[in-house]
Length: 462
Image 1 (cartoon, rainbow, N blue to C red):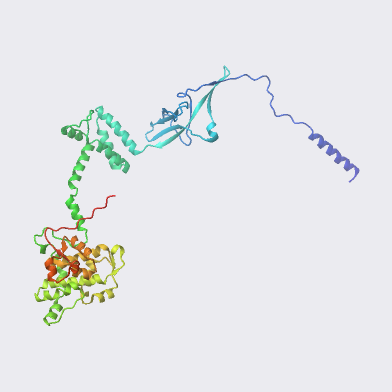
Image 2 (cartoon, one colour):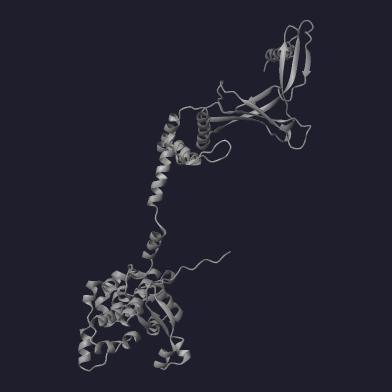
């Protein structure tokens, strides 16, 4: 670099340094003259009428809304200012409520003030203001109905016509919600029995006039009368309960025991025609013994064959079908129910009695399983059939052995069909040459009129 260039660089550096040291003008504004003095005055606020600051965050409160002020003491501290509350129900659907803020922490120390400045007197008056927050709530339909009812009560007291009230109630019952209908019904039912101012009941004529004057009350009374007339009686309710019990249908109007459970009802006319007893008759005529796996059938079939009692033989053969069907069931159903084995296994288990298998399944089962109700229904039918075979007085021991039940349980099934069960009489015990221990396992079931069905057990008192 030449000497001339070095001198030019030094000169530029000196000019740059000089420009950096030039002072910039100050941004602070200088006010000419002395400012005017302002007098500040702090006023004591009236605790009940002092100014209020109400904020409605997220709400657009109509300007026409007027609030009513309420106050109450703050707990037990008598020196603390009363708590203020503003409420308005001017809006047809919304209630507005303004409450004081219950701030905690640093926000609790925050205070709000309202100031008024007089520019002529150069005076500022400041007063503390209470801060409130406005909230809105949707008026419930039940409350609306209650308020309308109060208005209508005032109208009735002043002699105003109730036509509009009836129309509103009709609209509410037709198009209102469930809550509105419930409120209208409650108001109408409470007004059915009008009373005098002194608390004494009006006479019947005045009550009828009062109801007649109100269409809503008249409609309620008519519906109540119709409902009471069509209400089921205790006898009809008991009949419905009995209809659903697992037992054969009894003819309670019967005058003779044989008419209580007729064969045509308990078995069926078409089914009894399918029952075959010809093999038994032919074997008996040939002098062959009738063998059976059922104790009940084995101890009675010979006697019926000797008497040539074909109707009872058919009942006995039908009982054998039901007993074998019951013995072939498999345990494992829910709540005491049973399961049906596979079709081939069930047919093999029933043997010669499988000719009525489909008929029995249609009547006593519900698909591949039998509930406790279906099992009980099968056993009660067997109990009724045993009474037919034994002329309406039977020893429960043989059927109990076939079904694998205890004496008390089989007695319960007989009670369920209206039959009395008693211990074996002494004469019958001696006739069968039974010891007292053996006789205790034998109970006598007798069908007598009128029927005495088992009563439901009462629950234990807590």
